[in-house]
Image (cartoon, rainbow, N blue to C red; front, top):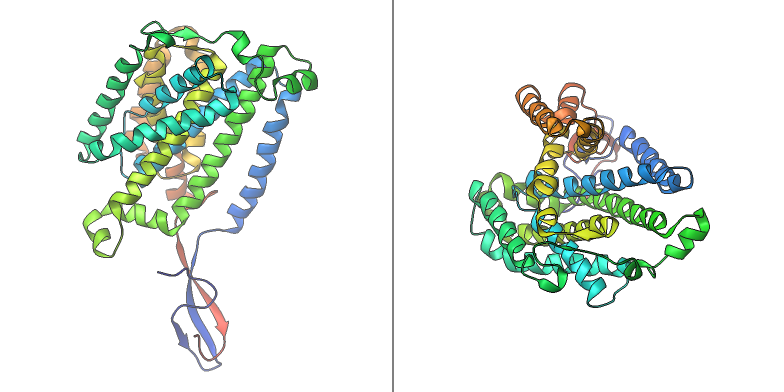
Length: 371
């Protein structure tokens, strides 16, 4: 179906030659103003290392990476209907490929991030046909089992520390692209300068993923994906290649998730199988973020990640108490706000900062006919 623009839809002529037409709109004046504000926020965040402390930069790395993972899981499960609890598989694979690239191949860390994403996408290409034989909860369990199997495999790789893991030597990071430039620009030590570089990469990836998902779900491919989620049989009857769309989405999400894993463990400079393939850190937290903020919204994960960061920051000193609070908040939200915080805002007031749904509106166009 071709895009709907101008006055290309069916019309009803009236006495004065005007035509009443229906148009499909996505953007609104509010969303356009939000886009301008978002650009200003991203620019301000990029300039923040000039005045922010190292601890603030590390917090922002956490927020940026978790936001990226949440947006990726949101498009996979929310729009694609592929509810996975095994996304830690691609985080771990990306992290381990980063370490392998640095230690064994002597690749620059920045380039190694892309290599890590490609490796995760390659594994996803192989796993996809196996997991896609499963539906619903069976797919979720299957993805978790696959992640556990990959964790056990990585634990057997002795050059990368085996089951105990390993650390990256400072010499392997000393020639990181842009490191000396950041050191001279801000007058920082190598470790702090590396955090700034990692923060910029994490912020860039979070921005690209958010914009990419927004554009994707607004596109014809996004409509086809939603149709596949709602009724695959009906979608196939009108020519939608449901399996192909989901498979390509699965690979794309794995690619970006692998890059996130590489970014996280480049900043940590220490890896172990249990940490890299942690279901709590890379799946449970991500699901919490999306459920709290609102599934199938762009704004929801932004709210959810700030809630998670606040809870971890202010309750981590009480041990596992923040996990109890996390669970209680999730239960309350699901009981009283099943659409999530931002979903509730949309339902009550219709406010969409990053709209993805199409809305019909009526316009008056001059002319006796529309060709």
